[in-house]
Image (tube, rainbow, N blue to C red; front, side, top):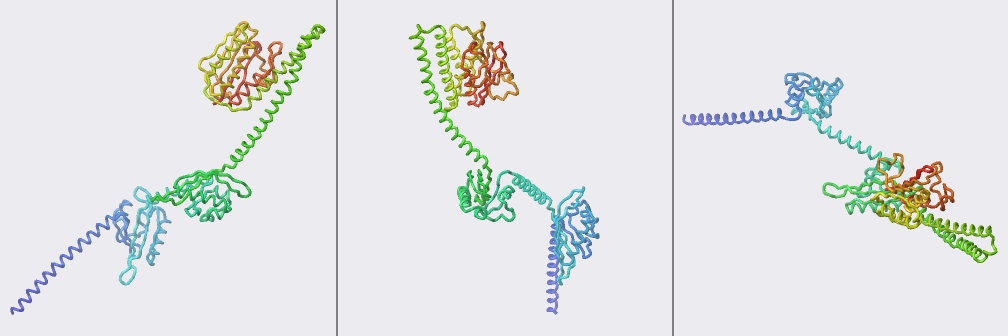
Length: 523
């Protein structure tokens, strides 16, 4: 009896223990279900459970918030009839077809732009996966959705950026390419394709040795290796013969580095300088010819100086002897003839001197520096006053006139212009000469000269503007020598000097009312 009672107590005790364990297990199960429900409801992705006929039997909070609806609005209804698929009937049909594939055992995945609340469209990555029981029978379909709008927008932005970059590169006049460290092309632009008659898709992965002759390819590869080794950009001139034409390119090559600072590619931008090189060669050839011509001119000038001066000196000398030693046997007419011969020979000598001076202006280097034109003009005027003391001329020189040029040559310019004004005001009782610079506001808009415009103005004899085209020609004269003597070489000299400075000279005048000569030295 005692044993039976003890067994009963033990049984009750065991039952209590089992009940306690059961209650604990039940509590743990409820807690696990609670946590699972929290995770289900708080999940960012869209999750729904569908029966085999497509009816929605469970759904978490995310798709409801997306559509702005309650669970009761969708539970018990076809999945493809959900508000987020209401964008079009075609979309609903695509979802229905995807579901059909899922209940046949496929894991279906697709991307669609779905309508959310307030009509906002978002890109959703949708998947449908069949759920099987222990007998491997499909009993449910789980539908999931991930909002990938930002990722798609980023991909679209990146694609648009790549397309813009591709368009820029393809429309560049330069040849642009990318090579890996092994020299294989990874990118070429349209200019590269057009120039070397290759197709981008077929050419990528090839090297310079597949396209160019060995010596050219070796040179290109050497430059690429130098960029990889140094890790710095270089600029080189590269030449190659292609389709029978010698092509010259100025290439800038620079490395591209990965996150570890290692060069993983060489980018090249090659600009066609073929025409520039041809022009440079032509300029060098022209300079060589000019030097040869100048040497010939120097030889000619030497010949003129020596071969013509000797007979002129003889003519002048013997004419003087006749006048001095045989004056008693010459009548007045004979003496007049000899005087004219002497005057003509002396004038011829002066013309030769002026011609030589003019030819010398085309030779020699111009040394430009800052020149005080006001001071030079005053020096020239002082010399003119000493040479012609009888002539009284009012001269006005603007102070502080500065220019950039060759001082010796600019002195010649002022000496000729001021000397001309001095000569052509010689018959005026109130002669006036002015040297100055035009204010910017007074410079004519159609004037081709650049820089400060200087002028020499007088109130002398002037000239007829009809003949202004002859002003700066050698030995061109607009007045009779009896009125104003000279060789007609002064203004030609001025024009030659101003042109060598990159400037321009021109004149304006009116007969009897004076003349003004303008010049600008450029910048």
